Length: 248
Image 1 (cartoon, rainbow, N blue to C red):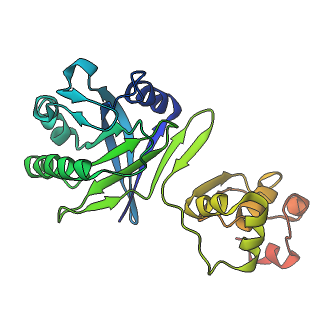
Image 2 (image 1 turned 90 degrees about the vertical axis):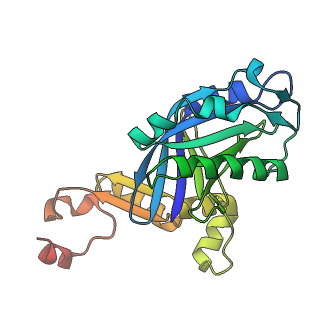
């Protein structure tokens, strides 16, 4: 099952202002998330951010971070279990190293295995890193104690940001490759992973839907309670008269 992490723009700014510290050393925060389980994926909505104070660390350097995990995590075990929350441990990589280090792997595994053994529930827990530009890479720990990369991290604020692994697909149809030439393959790859809802499918909604289809949107949710009638055929792209006969 795919797992996605979502947060608001203000939450992203809040996290970045703490973990991307002015002294150039690593820092961390704990994210308590509300899990939303769906048939094909799970979404973790950031509910609360708890910063680890700079003075609480045993050691902080540009490439290393040590903090008393039990002291902070034990405070939240009961709440995590009672409310069914997911925990994401996030720290920064000020040197712009865009991956989890060997030390990260070892320490995160130890902490998360202990967390999952102490807390009942099916909600996922994981860890994340943030780079100086604000980009995030995240992962969860599986039931067999293996790390699984999160499918997407999205930030919704004045601007919308998506972070994750968006591979190109050589098997894309020709019209998608044409879109790549206009907007770039990265945009096409992101669109392929998105679910977009359109409320109102006539008027401006109709061409919007057509463009979303042309740009290879992963999944469309169309919402409109009106029926196709002779009086609104001119407000919908490419309708056919026979459509009137099959519309309930």
